[in-house]
Length: 187
Image 1 (cartoon, one colour):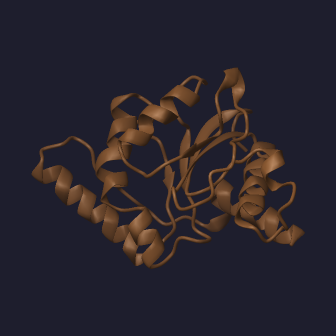
Image 2 (cartoon, one colour):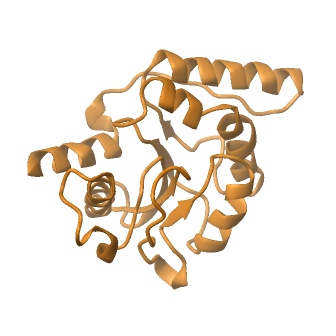
């Protein structure tokens, strides 16, 4: 478990408030995502999410100091401004977790496209919201590895100092995976 309250960013998930899930069944995406985020909080994380515009825009869970734990927008540089205005804990994020339940395949390849790797993550780095040591837990799929390789090539061509490295880990080493197992046990 992390130190209590370490901030993390979860991409592709919806940390909506309790009222938003009150009339949803436990198979609905917002119920499942909220339950996963609450499970991550029980593990010691202070979770924030960015969800895609295609998902219904429900109110986000309140965060410390009057911000919100859910940002609704595309994974590009503009969403960082909204995130910064809602993230009122001390940066940087300790970890970044990528949604993997709904994402493998064509949808994930599009959602986690070039703007994420070449705009949003570098902008978070530039603003000190992530560091070169911030682990990113990405599902192991060919399309995700290809996105990282493409971003590295693009960064080299533009003479940027960032790049992405990856190594496989076991599922139990990823907090989002263990939180998902908690939800699966409920279902």
